[in-house]
Length: 177
Image 1 (cartoon, rainbow, N blue to C red):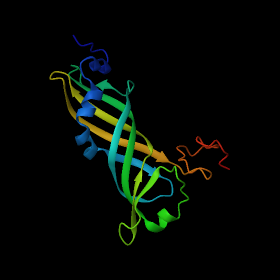
Image 2: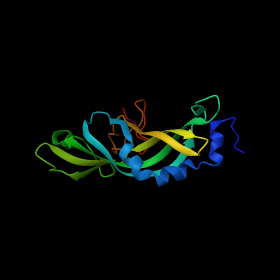
Image 3: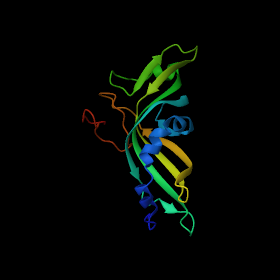
């Protein structure tokens, strides 16, 4: 018998991490990218690689959608390693002060007359919202959003800054002022 007091009790029989791994190819094409790098205008960002490190269930956001407890909404967050391919104006790319260990990798410096092809490797989270049918033990629908925000780069080592309130670089620990 399934404990139906909380929708997250559904995890006793529904292995969400396994479902995500089995459906990763479909997810890749469906994931919306919600992120930016301050001062960098990227075009056509697309996920080229994604590896899930850890999955967390957002208990406060998960709930039953009906009084009969036949349908549940489950919110999941995953810490992921991701590579994102994008295009960037040449002048924007070459004006960046990127050092060797940057998260931005130049793939083709002459993609066309105006653009370079870059690959970005940011720290990211994958938020997945699932609608689960309890009667047939199936995931009816899902929405996946990749989230990352980079507020700039350390002027000393080019490490990405994931907060606009950083005073010291998390990598080299030097002052950002």
